[in-house]
Length: 356
Ligand SMILES: Cc1ncc(COP(=O)(O)O)c(C=O)c1O
Image (cartoon, rainbow, N blue to C red; front, side):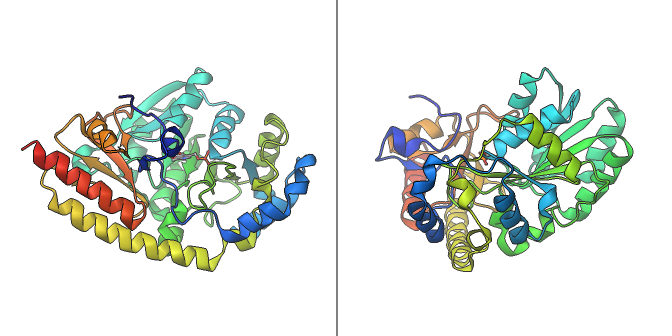
């Protein structure tokens, strides 16, 4: 049975699969966005505004930022690839384990990659002092990618600790890319961990945000870069291909981003289902899960074939063997609807209990 390296295509491959491999909000596309897309089908014959002024103003209003500091991309991955190019990175630091596209982007540019292994015994948590002392010892590093909350571990670093790293980076000509793709799932806590309100014009920081996961739009995708200056926005814009954000994604506005009913429904679902999953996972002797405040968990079991065995029961999870430091004894599961979560728990119990 094949291992799927990227989540998100389960149900397209087999409609009967329950897909825990992609961390997409199961509440689905916000109703107002669906309505806007239906009402704007006639716009498909036009190119979107290549400067995306309207979209950037809406995003700026939603996140209380200046639109001059915002650029947009066809998903956040396109902005990650572009940031690496625009910033002329030579030697980069990535953490392990983390989202694989940072290294993929750098390999395309033949950038020298250093890896900082997050400590397994400390549940892969970030530690600002250790990061700064690593940077001191490796003074050729000119770019750091930090995923916060981290995919797949759920590790987080708060804005005070980020400020310490940013100050070191500013003084040492290092750019810091903060990937906040999952930050919206922190809901009320998001400001404690998002650096978007703390970024200053002199900071060497680029924040990458994604609306894909929280607003359940992997079919149209929208990525946001929050830059310290309008100058970096111009450089990104000039390097990227024009019209990279499609007409439907460009319909997203402040009301959709700040839709309080949608956020409330997400908050209720997430709280209830995280409570359920954590209670049930704790009862399974051969499963350990890493603490997470977002919509996925990294799980560890003694079995190397758990993803394959789950797949035989039509439950698709993310086999983590292609993440640095991890192997097939680690899987990542998304938090899904209650019915789906029950099937996952039942399947895990059956597989692990039958192997005793
Ligand atoms: C940490 C992280 N950042 C960015 C992305 C890419 O999201 P987008 O669809 O906005 O390109 C992903 C997708 O899995 C991710 O896990």
